[in-house]
Image 1 (spheres, rainbow, N blue to C red):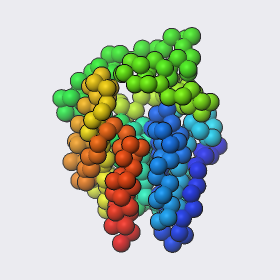
Image 2: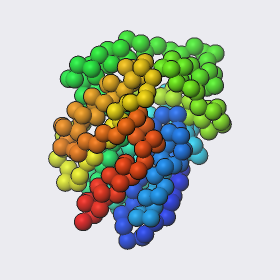
Image 3: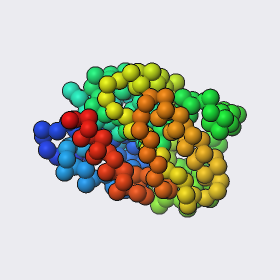
Length: 265
């Protein structure tokens, strides 16, 4: 299987690198939904902003899905090299969790930004309701639906303005249309709780989000972040808004810097 692409931002060679795994409708260095706003952290260490398969400059994924958290996990393990800090957002956080659970010896610290691993927090009533809703609503997309339609309709459904349909954004939309749903992924938390390195979970408070977006996505993601942080013994950071690392990169970047320094120390 061909290697995935990562935008490499060189930093000091004597510090362990950091690997970033993006979420849906995005790619590694994307400023709108990805990790473009984390570029300043390269003053501390080399950053690898990964493009998951089917996104950015990475190859397509052959098989039943256009993107798959289990394949992402395999790619992440490879990118960790001899050891790296690991950051994942949304869908990318699920692959990061699986990679960290599989090879904890290669992880220096773990940061999960609004992880999409709802099944890991299924005991919470808000998350349980979201899972029931998602499972009952899982149907095949219309065969004539285009990535342009998908990008527009998924934004309009929750009261958001669609992102500009650039070629990269439309490729990410195409991948999302055939993704393996991450919210139902079996993500073992015990290896993360037992790991010797520190974990940080970041969530937004979803202030300013359209009401329907907050109800359908925000409420379960906030609850899941809290449950996962408690179960793995992680620090929980809450910042304003609904895309923490994009809307408020200052406190998120500061928290990442503190996490990495503590782990390296």
